Amino acid sequence: MQPNLSIMVTNLAAVLIMMFGGWLISLIYRNVTVVDSLWGMGFVLIAWITFFLADGIVSRSLLLAVLVSAWGLRLCYYLSRRNWGKGEDPRYGTWREKSGERFWFVSLFKVFVLQALFMWVISIVIQIGQMAPAPARLTWLDGFGALVWVIGFVFETVGDWQLARFKADPSTKGKVLESGLWAYTRHPNYFGEFLVWWGLYLITLSTPGSWWTIICPIIITAVLLKMTGIPLTEKVLVERRPGYGDYIKRTSAFVPWFPAKVKR
Image (cartoon, rainbow, N blue to C red; front, side, top):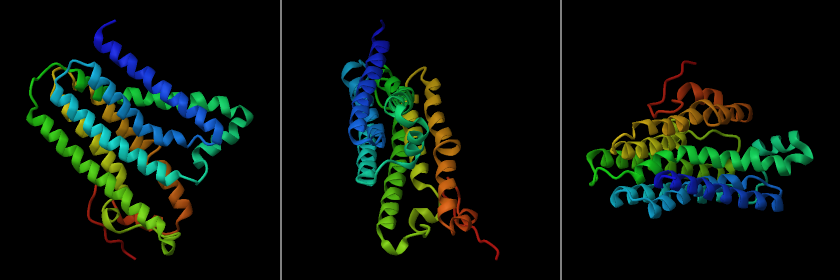
């Protein structure tokens, strides 16, 4: 087996083992929401396994590992804190009801193995960037990618912090967050996630023949814009928060922009 392919297979095995452990924990607590916390950690695991096993350029490999770690650890902490003591996420609760007594086994494949495979595919952009033997030095594209990543990381972190603070205030119950970054985009955290992954792609793009890894940020973008990101989130918010419909009319869905003036 070729060295790079062997590393990728090792990474797949590692995240499958990690998710299997998460599944066992979910059986003990009857709560599969633990998988949300493992999502970010899986990328951190892949990044460092690749760093230590690959023969790529150390500076670029380390840059990718550090950026992925900062993103993954922050996301793990945020989601773990948000979900702590709140029971199972309604998404998974619905699946549990539909599967009935078989859910303990179904969840292994439908939740944990599926996310492990998804995680591994998306992380290909990280793995290829770390394994590439050239160029020998960091380039302007590496720097530009890191800058895009930083902007995305700030958006995601600040957006999540503002939302957490808003939800913690009892006086805001049933209201819509329309201040801070949320005044310019309805989903600053998703926009930040988008930039983080395109930034990582730009770093990998600095290496020869890596253009095809664009599939990874495209998958992330599709998930955010068309699948479980904005569509699912806004469906719930429109139903639960009366003022959200007006907020949609005033505020950009994704890319930050100045609020629109709505005629009354």
